[in-house]
Image 1 (spheres, rainbow, N blue to C red):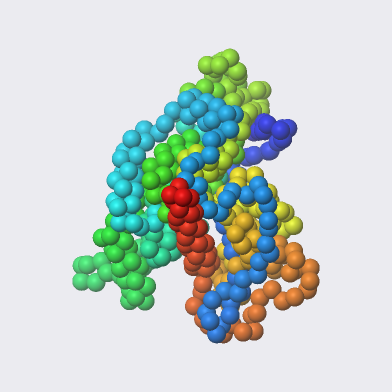
Image 2 (cartoon, rainbow, N blue to C red):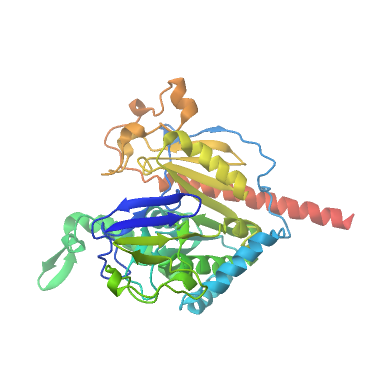
Length: 460
């Protein structure tokens, strides 16, 4: 079948696919689905060099100073959103109905946020996994985003380790904190077990590691510090994000948004979606009408499938200015071209005026990332060569390629000679989260100082 995907401002992308819509249900993620890697969200990567004597990463950073950046000190009153952004928000949420579980999610999140607000605890909303774009109301076929949710699930564990309460908003059936160690694995979960006198027990070689993970999980459950919510579609994700963000407003600067989900840039509006499965033969195709007079966004014309997508409104600015004006906001930028990574991350920071963009390359995302922020400029975090996790898709020769200033100078990017062989592997999220936590602490302190200064001025 010959598929034409129409994207605004991008012309027509023609893609020849072999039986592209063979998915049995909406939850399947297979090679036959139409998949796209969105621009960086959900797949962060860090670069870190280590100083063996201190056990801490060595960071290099370059300061950026832009008057467009959001003030690092949280403001007492949220700025007014521009009218066209409010109109886009109202139009989207009016014409695309909420998920069926939105009321239940709001109830759970309200209780969770309120409880931890009373305890004075920091709360982070971690988004994880990829969103889908359904092509039919009774969904059989959809466009998917490439993300297993590794970054989000792993980061959630380290946030919990650092004392945060975590709302984990994830794609249904993507990786979860703690269980990620044993799911989406090349080995079957049953391979970790054996039968012993009619009982199922964990194999000896896995007992220590599984006991460690189980104890961490049980501790988090007892403390009630992890709330798990799920989405499937782009619309479900945006509804959940908006409602949870508004519930987190009372936390003020103690709220954080760690946006690691791979979010679709284009979608099919509800009023342009056909009801039933799109037929592969034109003779069986549905009528070409829709509620707003436009043709259906996904339809067959002759032997071709035409998919006419519309842009998803950019809601990051609303999150910054309206939904959570005092919270720390962290977004991700994924690229494949090393020469573009820092430029695109810097552009995103300027455009949306939030706190931190974490940039990563698709081929090196498990071993390095770059932080781009108004507070600290450009900072690379990298796992040393002998402590890197294995990756079938990674390309180690590209580590450091996006660090253009250092790469072009010819200086060594990683002090491999100083790292002992045989040391335990390091998950890059274990380096990312402490750095973000330190930045969050500084922002909270600045907010307190700003509030104190404002009170003093009022008294005078």
